Image (cartoon, rainbow, N blue to C red; front, side, top):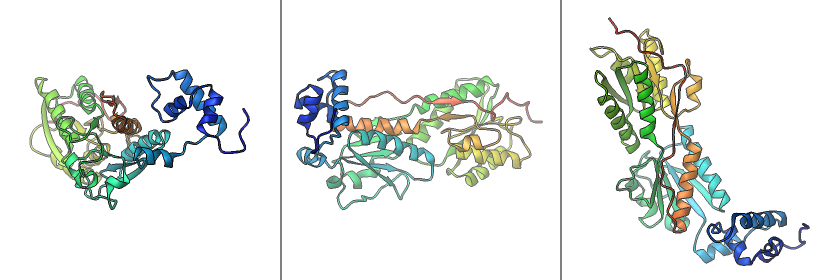
Length: 340
């Protein structure tokens, strides 16, 4: 199909695809589902690619009153997890002609300041990961569509909530360790006032409470290796039978647990098994490699952006939690014999 010497129009695409201009508008505006067939939609997209057609987004945005810009607010940029969330969100956004501005909140989980003179004038919506909705009031002014990631779906101020199935991840970890004969546990908990970490603690306690003969002690630490070393060492040397398994809220905390265990002259997993949660690159850099729960950060970001686009279009977002997967590596083994 030869390219025109002038800039192609939607009429040219319609003629090339053998459809109406209205159908072209539906397909390229991603509003075709339920209105035209998938085969027709692909024919329109193929014609647009062949002709080099690009919709006039400026005119379209003016018509719709949209900026086609979304703000993604994350607690920090110090972990690769949030980089994955951004990558997934930006990938979906680009397919729909949107841009994503990444904004790490200076205060971590909140409150976040408005990075614009007026967020309502500069943005179409906000996606916030692992933050309380009321921490975003300055940004959204309770007017912009808001999608919450990794947040309590009950009573959320967001128009939609997208979550990983963290509770199932904790269940998988617990069943794995119980199956290896562990009954004495240390929960190395993230010292972060966030719903997702509260959920992990509740789920672990509930799972272990259902099994006779189990015991759990808890130590909290900020998510840093040095803080985790101190917390784990103190917890493992407390009076009473030593835990045989350390369940960590995060892979960085697990790395700290490794160091604490070795400082005490013990071995992973011969004396103490260790599990993490995230499956960061760190998990396979540790020796032995870390048993942890894999969270698909990019899919998380994709689902967040898909949910926001659905809200903007007046559709119901997908409601199912995103599955997670326990990855068993060398840091877990059968429970050691009781310490003398």
